[in-house]
Length: 102
Image 1 (cartoon, one colour):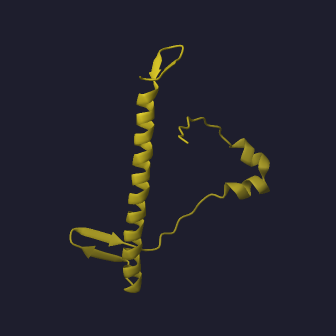
Image 2: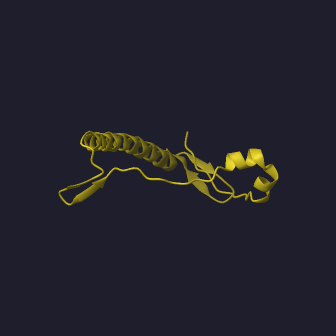
Image 3: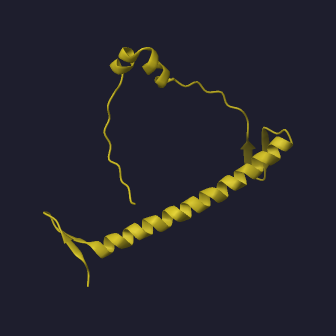
């Protein structure tokens, strides 16, 4: 028997939603495992490049680079401490929807 939740607008098939949630959780677990494998492979390549003092190498049809990159970032935490009024003046609120499954 299919469980159904009735809302103001229409009936919701709980078994279908449960199946969707289980699918999402399974995919997320697989994604996590694949990301770990990818990170391990990247670490091995970076270790080889570091050991051989390489910043760039061409392997087959691929160009692999591992070199320092300089970036500049704005330290909003420090601005908030030093000049909270200026920080507040340029603070912009935003709203978004957050979807979670626990």
